[in-house]
Length: 355
Image 1 (cartoon, rainbow, N blue to C red):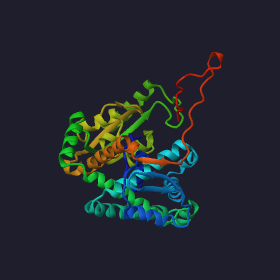
Image 2 (spheres, rainbow, N blue to C red):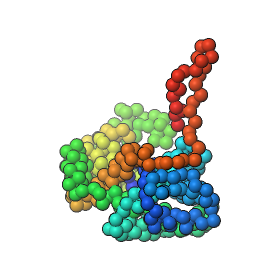
Image 3 (cartoon, rainbow, N blue to C red):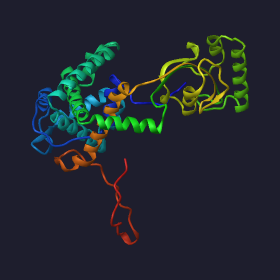
Image 4 (tube, one colour):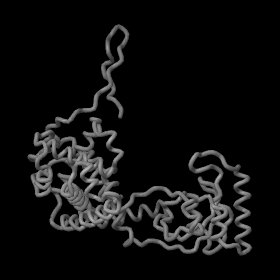
């Protein structure tokens, strides 16, 4: 069964970081991290295109490298590479990582080093398993291993620094609020189900009426109640490609990731019983919950701290960044040309172009 998307970890976390934090930048003194950027950009254009408070600067070579790294992890970014609005976002992201990395204390840097090593191990394993390996892909992207390592370390310093500023009380308060809003948020379940859909998931075209789907689901329920084999019936009846060949089973999954109706049933059904048909946005499910437990505060406090750190970084981008950039030679997004008003005069306040 398809699930609601949530933030992912590992290599995906690094990609998510770049997508979520089109954030940004500001005042920083020159640090080892900044020097690493300069070294990584050796032999590349050195004209300064952006300056920010406390002597910070970005050269054309450093910006091009950062842009190439983002395109390396997110190939879809290539189509926006020349878009001034996108370039401005990338510039702000680069400065943010530099600034926040420069603010990391020794403890945050030690944690950042640990995270950076884990990320690089994941990157090497992921791309190393692909045709041509990591080196070939880096060459095609016009970046080096040193460029990526510098980017990852700087990013992890920034994140670790933000996380270090989140207090234990803030984490506990956020945990309590989340549970108050959804008591099953941290529940985990092992569920078997057989899904009968009304519409083809790929095309959206109706494959059977709701009445037909419900009747088919009840047929499955009856066979299971009479001792039918769940594995065999899932292969025969289920329209869920993600679990059909595994006996309809999802093991130790977070309930909150599922369709709300399916998740509610997973949280409330008696264990090891065959359910009545459960209607979700996908169709009708016959379910059996085999196990259920809840993550403790200790299990989730790390992820909550990361979420709160993300909020801090975004707040930095929104509130502090605008006053930190001193010069910016990158192209600016164009404004819409005002429509001619009667008599040839233009409107007094043309609206800026939307992206």
